[in-house]
Amino acid sequence: MTDRFILQEVLTDDVPFRVHNVKIDKFIYEQDLPLMLLAHYDRLSDELKIQKPLTDFFGQMNDKVTTAQACAIFGVSPDSLRPATHIKITGTSVIVWDEFPLALHLQFTNTAKDSQTTDERDITQAVADEIGNILLSGNVNVLHKNTAKELVSIDLSDDEFVITPSDNYTRLPNSHALATTQILNHIRHTTPQAMAYLSHALRDKIMEHVQERF
Image (cartoon, rainbow, N blue to C red; front, side, top):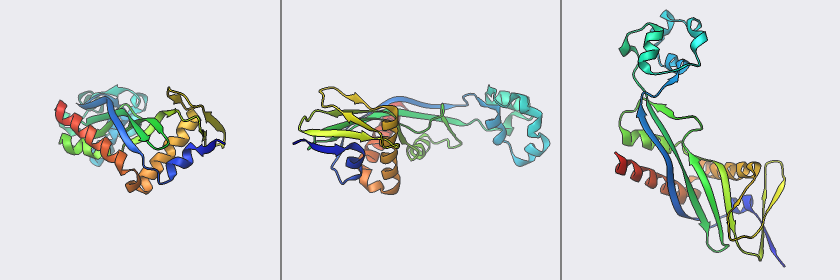
């Protein structure tokens, strides 16, 4: 008789997952990348916003410009806006439950946007702040080899997807990947100690990358 396991339920149980690896795919830390004009406008002082009403710039709000270009468009002095720091962190991690055995290849990012902006100038502090915004998202690949165990995924619409035992990773359909990352993010937010093993590994790898690069 084959034992049946539901992936999303396994993730909520007290299962001893460990981190196999963490890889950084993209790391951006740059000053004054082009932003939509609306984002620059939001950074103006309240006094300047009164002098320069938003309606004057409606036709250009979606244009991406640098800080200097934005100041020129608004007709304000160059020091009216401080260039923002842009941070983008994306990568992957593999977590493993050895006893099953089961492995999940996950993607993570600090923002779904091109980058996140901050006024923090200290790189260590700026990156540390963004680590707190890391979410699991995107594709989920599952490695399940045990033919004695049936593993299924159930998405948010209660549709099932059978993860057939294989020596290769199986990519979950998008709806099942979403259900999986949503559960993991919920656990990290509500009971952070339950996934401290992953949060600590992500933090250590990202800060190691910062130290090596900067």
